[in-house]
Image (cartoon, rainbow, N blue to C red; front, side):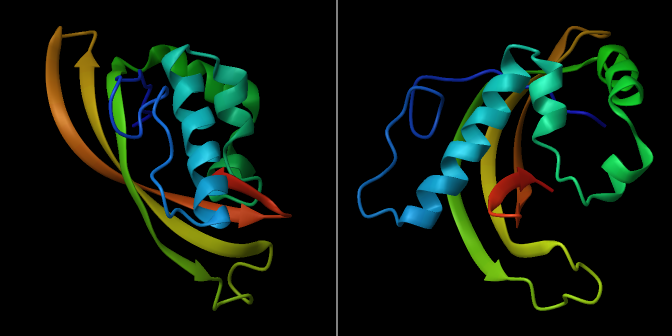
Length: 140
């Protein structure tokens, strides 16, 4: 399932400040997550695809045109999001399995989903994995 997003005005939404005491690395992850989610909000699908980890299985098996076809066909839209926390930042302990990945982090997000096919909405909590690859944070 592809998730497409929209911001809310509180907490870690698109217009929210990063909480005090946040480390430089957490700020980098927050910035990447926010840019990714904001691209989903505006349906800037090229930017969304560019935020997918280059070493991911998805990118290895789906070029941009394939992704675009899937994204346009998906009935799922995110109408609001709030980044709740960035946690479990960790080194890649399995370079054999994931040779291009430096680090992993979890980004917990509350979202309001809209299903365009049924016009139903749902409130969900989701944990995205972000990965650091080549010095940049991507959605895993």
